Structures are given as C-alpha cells and as structure tokens.
Length: 130
Image (cartoon, rainbow, N blue to C red):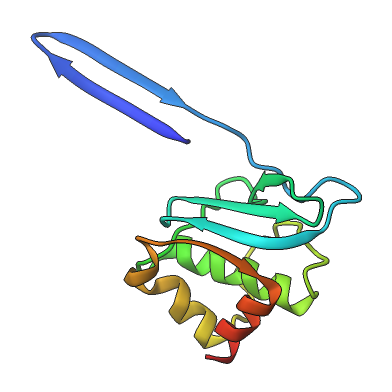
C-alpha cells in the first residue's frame, strides 16, 4: 500500500487507499546500477540504462529502514543478495538468509531513515565492510 487515509468529521467517513504492485525482479535484460532509499519510505533500483523501478519484493514482504523489525531485515537480506551476486540477481527471495551484521546494523540505524541515498554496488560493499 502506498497511502492510506481514514478520517471521520461530523459523521462523514473518508476512507481510501492507494496501492501499487512491485515487481519480483527487474525486467529481462535490465541490470542493477544503484539502490535508492528515499527517507526510509520508498525503495527503488536504478538500472544501468538509467531507468527507475520499484525495488523488487515478494508478496507480504515490505522494506523498511531505521528500526529493529522485519522491514529493515528484509532490506538487509536483499542488499546481501545483491552483494553476493555482484548485482546480477535482482529477484526478491523469501526468507532472510544469512546477512552480514554491518548490513543489518545499517538498515536498522535511525539516522538513515531521514536521508535520501543512492547507493552503488561499491557503496553497498563499503557498508558491508563496516
């Protein structure tokens, strides 16, 4: 869900939702160039061709940053997958697997929530090294 609004005023109820669907992977022939984290709320991939795509995700698995929960853990797992495959495997995988501690720490750090960052594979490797 992208946005949700619920409000009652003098007996009138306003209730709407906006949803979108994230891909499971980048389209055939596209490759990872950078991960964009937009204030911890939106997550994108920029392809080598310069196109933007929502960060691939599986049904029921959301991404987050800046707290100690499932969203940051899922994001850290996806980053680990990108690093382990040199950015070649962009398909969202179930489960959290084995994630390096510096990546988990970065995803859970509140300081990253207020930032907009564009991170290349090189930047992600620097985070991995701590």
